[in-house]
Length: 137
View 1: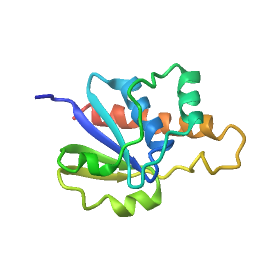
View 2: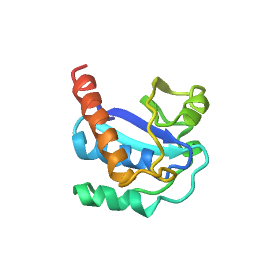
View 3: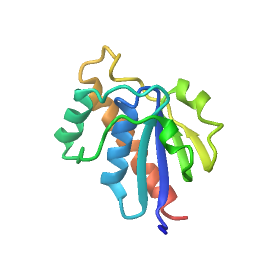
View 4: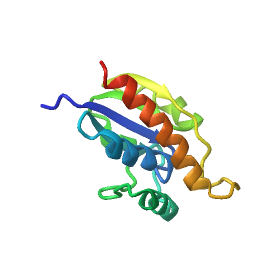
């Protein structure tokens, strides 16, 4: 049995934001946290997601697009939604301690220059704050 805080990041496609968050939490503090990601309508990981992580030196090992249904029987301390659509769909998950709603622009559909790196940076800043606050429990 693990004493790690279990976190599931959820977005619709599990192609960018939730993958970034999963990898970043593992990178930031895998000693105290177990990170997972899933989508309500999973597709494929956008290659720019992996590129942004690799550019920062964050491991992409083990990342793949998963359905939230794969985690239906699991217990999580936190489920963190990363877009408004997924936050509406995730409040009924069994075995969830707390649901947090973080909303980030989808870099896949963004017209911003360097959208993936921008979203990566925003999520990384939020994760560092989350780790700081939640690891003191």
